Length: 275
Image 1: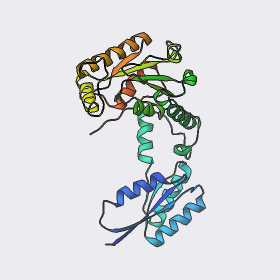
Image 2: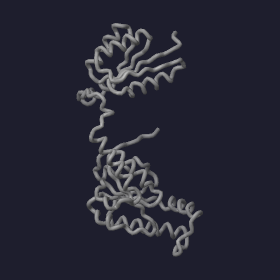
Image 3: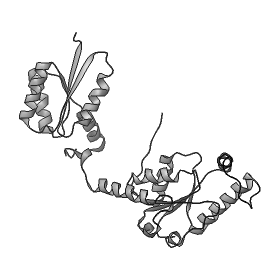
């Protein structure tokens, strides 16, 4: 039984997928191991050279070749040489084809293609960073969504999550004495707006923690009064703007994002299941 294991990760694109599968697999075995990645393999001659080297080094080949002609060629020639070659994509291709009745597009390198969707996502992230916490109000009208939120309602992480889906988001803080600027009021009914809140007990705990460093405002007698005033002010603002109001106390960012994208028919919905 060999005490060494060599795997060739072969791809017609960058080869990251094949290499990651190889790494994840060999780590399960207590044996000396090495992995060699072969990328941009698109010709029969290249495949034959790799197969001959695999025979010489007694290596296992795992490949992610999209084009069926080259994939089949590798499969046939590997069997002729007695070499183990595993097509990592074929089982899933077959399952999806059987499920949908559709044929694969067989386009190489789609996961690395810098297409319009990629650039739109980059623009959305840049826009969202530039419009964080009330910045650059003069270009607010270019937003796909405006988030207004009380402190500690995760408005910035939520905005960045949505930006990664290609949605241009601006967020604005709602404090005890906040008055909404005219730039936002003028966009009422034109740009979707969401107001974020948290439950009274959670807000109370947050304010008590904060008041260890800061004093109450002069006209506020207690933390209870402070929290009540903050919530009242937020709800007055949200009502004035006719915002969709979301309590973020229990839901995670992905769930909140799904609620928003579904409500306003924004570009993407993403779900995340944790076990």
